[in-house]
Length: 372
Ligand SMILES: Cc1ncc(COP(=O)(O)O)c(C=O)c1O
Image (cartoon, rainbow, N blue to C red; front, side):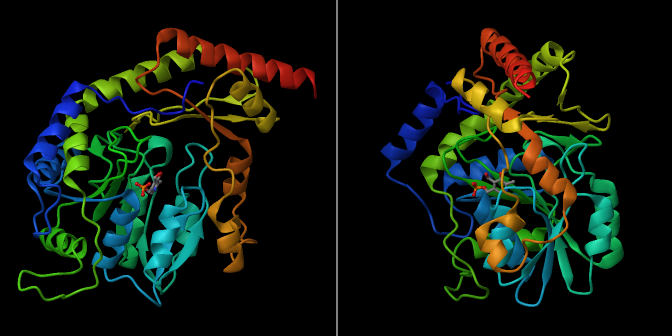
């Protein structure tokens, strides 16, 4: 099976991890963290184009730490899309605040600016645009609305490392940006995350929050948790970051080849990079007019690890249904959850893999249309 994503781990990563094992220093609970963590934070901040990066142990931790740093809690509302990974909304619930679900647009599946404007209330405190599939959300109008209503902007950039909006890196546009380095991500270390910011005070607060809220005098000033990134993961992701240009080039090359091979296909809508944005091509997500699940089954049978992200929108999951969200009118969210399929474009693919993915999709569409 061609996997939907696969980390590329080389000799350099192994050497760096061995260095950690030999040093015996596996983690560090001081405010600034251990040496590999600090090196990685410097490299990430430079790459994203911000003053600070704070490494944590997952993208979920990055979101929770960001909301805690902004004093989000009971009585606050946080605007989030429902068409995203569940962590985006769960981070809000974890703080005691209420997620308010916003629809997406069907052009690139990111948050709908029109629906966002409708959903802002006197209780809104934060908006979390998600750069889904590596497609940057339309940040200018989002930031404008946030300014008008006094909201903080936390970018969920878990899927968008290397994507940019009007030449500005995602994760550097809002007050805070949250990244994930989970195994399938563009740059991976198994479990890991980071928050990026230009705000000096928020940076210190985030470093405190990742370490039980402990200040230098061993006193807890704010609610924190153990969100620290271990040194082995930092060693891995530090080297992965140094290889990011080649990873991104590979993804772009494969996405371009897929678009070329599929351009004449009927019944399938291909992703289109918007003029003012650069995609990192974390996923190549198409939408099918008809029979999505039959096409998916055929692709999987042929050995293509095509996957649906996300089949159940968050507001319709059992957890959120119990909280009373299931009947919200979010038509584009529901449409997307019923029609999208993501195809592999990761840099580990060979040319013949890309050709096989394209021909399998064309054949799957032909077969399902015949059976209608
Ligand atoms: C959009 C989005 N937000 C948040 C997360 C959470 O990141 P992690 O799995 O590292 O906790 C992910 C990870 O899959 C994600 O895709």
